[in-house]
Image (cartoon, rainbow, N blue to C red):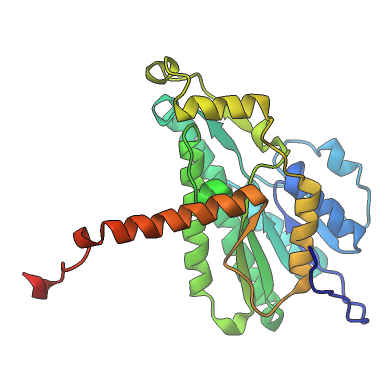
Length: 298
């Protein structure tokens, strides 16, 4: 696959990236790639101590900061430190997230709420601060906000109902936020929709709950198939290194027109295409039930 060259012959100034969820998966790979290309990386993590894998990336252009994205105080402090240290933030890779595996009936509500605190409210905290910095600190230079959703943010699945809902919420929030931007601010916002990649999203970052008794008797139910898929991981073929490279190239290209949504991986692209086509077909099939409801039609 060929993509336009971004080489203009003129050295650009290093970009300043702020990356959440940087201790593994896409966040880690983006951090490494940014540093490798001479950019500055502000890499955040949630654990109480610096993850060894991040600490091992020793670089004068790497700033490691602890950040619990569910805490607006933490988020504000991270952005404040970044501003004071580097004077700006050019790209925010809003990536922190967790997964719950279990039928909706079998998932404790408190655990679902905790996941929403990370996947939705944490994403919201980061997004709001990103917009503030891009507009009020960077001014005319603006910035890029990349909010990491999932193929499940468009195509929900059994067994990950609450996770799917959190990503649907992310997508609605992000699209509305993009519509609120004044073009003069030069803020570019994109939702990234990865498919299945070999990251910790399907292992360490997933909390599983026992199958609800009503669903456990039939192995052919969709939620049981999803459980098996998580267990054997045979269908997870996406390479996070390649995905990070594609994301970096997407930012580097800095095209005038960018998509609201960018799918990553064939499974996400084809899955979302099929979903959208199905929605159109369903809409047309049941059109008679939808139209003619204005007051004038009484």
